[in-house]
Image 1 (spheres, helix red, strand yellow):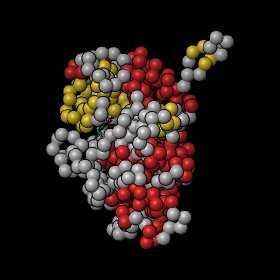
Image 2: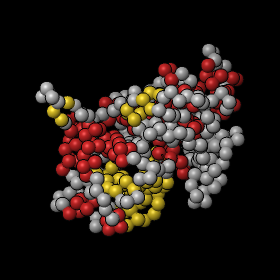
Image 3: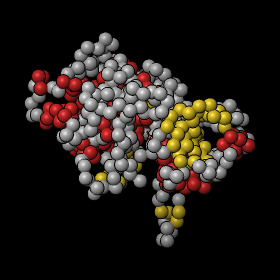
Image 4: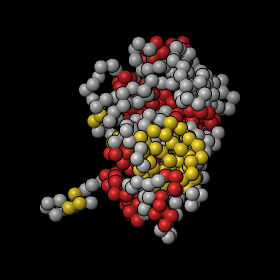
Length: 405
Ligand SMILES: Nc1ncnc2c1ncn2[C@@H]1O[C@H](COP(=O)(O)OP(=O)(O)OP(=O)(O)O)[C@@H](O)[C@H]1O
């Protein structure tokens, strides 16, 4: 908080405050002195994520490395602060209050998700069993709902950013807040991954900028659902030149939908599931529902030929109605978070040296304590490995489009 000229306290919001604290605590250190690298967990556009063990504590954690060459300090601090800000949600990856830099990287520490990411467990062209998919969908919906309740838009919803703790998706958490922005803020260029990108952001030649909007997360969430249930993308990109998208858009815009007119890729779904998809994937962004509407469809069967039947139960045993209220933290809880961070050093070095400071994830004030081949379409997607580790053929990489800065 700062004091304005007239003496009143100018409000600096929590996110800005977290960024200031983070900047004040950023220090250089020799990573090998404090961490033993076990293996690389993943690679992204701007760096990598390694599984490490803290040499003094023995704590396993995931360190996210953002290359200084391609990441501005401001972007790093923003990603770190947003990740921390939303981490109280039980369906979002937890954070350790640790950040530092080396000559080459900015680095922060996260909880380690022991089963990797959702991308790796979706059987290509088959999809996950409906029960597993629903369990996952429910948790991701709650995570997104939480983010939206904080007036933030994730902007990079895809299976690679859903981290999993077991193969049955009993515990999954949303991650990667590098693209997250406040709803309503202007962004210069489109960002995202093409099959998940909403049609209004796919239009070529639109360089006039966009306002960040929840509806883009809703669209990506709808595409994610399709991928999980089928092991395919519904289309390559949401543009009229894509025959799969065009067919879907025509069907969406029909005033009266006849069963026979359902596009072939969508005929495997029950009418309730189709209704859900129509709400999530409304062509006009104003018509799209909120993410939480999916929760009203969990009690229905989604797949026509499912062997698992439907699962109406919540993964956490919580009542579906009122979930948002349960997950929203109060401003005093947010204040607590800032206070704890101020007291807690953000350096791994001091975390060891200071008595009474343990390296545990920054815990939610209201924690429940509960405990594709990239999906391919039947069309002509370019088949490229997601990484260079010999996964070739398993995945179809989507073409990243311009990233906003
Ligand atoms: N906490 C974690 N535990 C386990 N694996 C993780 C963790 N964080 C990231 N990963 C793995 O590393 C991959 C890349 O991580 P992340 O998405 O955070 O990087 P990124 O550079 O932002 O990626 P992108 O450019 O795709 O947005 C993830 O898809 C996942 O497989």
